[in-house]
Image (cartoon, rainbow, N blue to C red; front, side, top):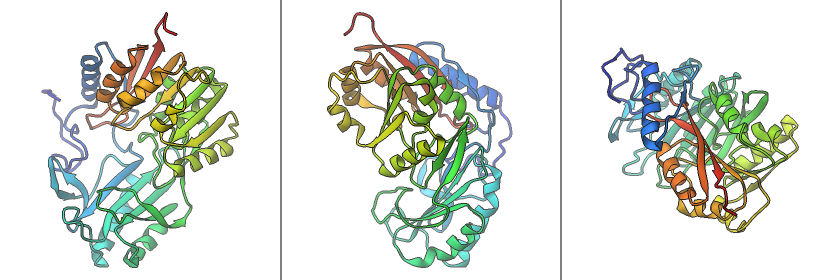
Length: 372
């Protein structure tokens, strides 16, 4: 981003930490620039809805534990880690516990992980903090089941409502793992609008709870009839839009998420939704020429849908696609793939990621006239 309007960043680590890059730019300028970038990328004017809060908005942060440090990788230098004493993107209530755990890592001589040589023990320290409830979840990801982590878990369990010990023994650099042990509650609860959602250690949820309801409202206004929700996660969008639909059927690969989606539906008393664990691409293979749905909602990961899934969607008979995207570049590419059968009718941006270059979008694509 290029601007002459610079300001003093709030975080002492800004400029070194790779977590955010826009703190020296006024927030209204960030939003305007994101709108300009989307307009250039999509080829039409795109409104970007600002976040109600520019700091302390993230509900999840994964701190890497490596080389004796706990923090984020240094900007543009993957082999180095910035040892953090603060993070302005998470709500401030996480900080006292974060600092206690950082000190305890050194006090108890707990070895961090070297992701270059694939040696060591403690890989990640993860916080999940709900925006609209007091829930706080802490996860520790270790490379083995050695119980050296237990003193840290004891500290976390005194303050966090949900604590998890995850084990990831592979070589891939992942901040996820199989749940080895759980302490206190198995999940935290976030509330978006009138609906409560359970969130576990390995499940996806929109990162900005302060803006989430506006994004979901944008998607909800476009759904009608029988709805298919692909990449449904824990059922957040499925449940939120259910009151506008006859039925909603959600598909998601991660079984842990589907378990929570079903429980979220039960707890909220929403009975016109159902869910299935399946790979979206494989599941769509069975839906050639399907006429079971009027609206398809997609919320894929950053890699987008890709040509194969887009082609399979084009073989279906729904009238509209509501596309929720965290990556405008792959959204643009997928819109091009889908243009064989669908035209872009509307698109709006949501600044779910202040202080960073990222932006979320909701796009409505409608079947072209004259195409069966």
